[in-house]
Image (cartoon, rainbow, N blue to C red; front, side, top):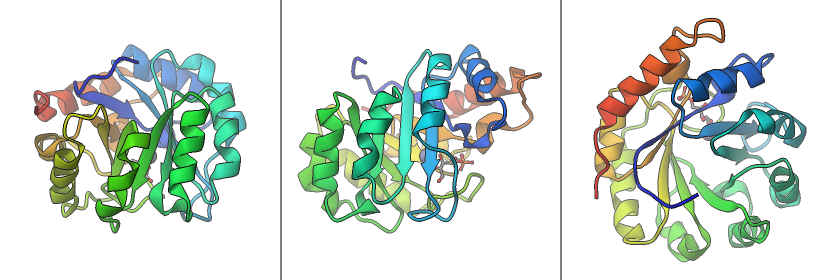
Length: 230
Ligand code: DX5
Ligand code: ZN
């Protein structure tokens, strides 16, 4: 994975047919997905439950691009190794998931995987400052994590801009997760984001039997996002 701030669309399979992940992933990638975003939820850190490392391992062979695993679980440390073994390329943990996020990021880096740091809408960026050297990606949650299809929280745009300034020349991606649409994509990209996670906006109107809308929706997001900001 060479670092580039070129805009990437990362569809979230939270909006996919859970009985057909393999086919859904193949459809997304054939329609132009850059990364595949995998939402792991534990009904403890967030009020929803999805799946664990066994499912991640099962879907891994279907992913040709990048497997971007977003862990909404707490405690998280004991599971890092399992997601690395499942084949994740990026493992993202939440800053709010425990007292020792620094150690968590060290563990992720220790597995040889890219380390992602997610921050909830209520979390400021001050807490991120001393973690930058351990981080390959910062995921700014633009909804409260737990569910797809929620409304974008616009107060996060200012935060994205401040984070972009804090990152400077460091090779750290800014990923946006939640409520990304053709309306919100240009705002977050102008503020400094380069990876757009999208569930509802990608899957709308499509299916494994009729995947063309996935492609149309991703192309519309890409067009709306425009060129990456320096
Ligand atoms: C929310 C998840 C998101 C979610 C995004 O907790 O982390 O990845 O699926 O869904 P949309 O794009 O529908 O807001
Ligand atoms: Zn996510």
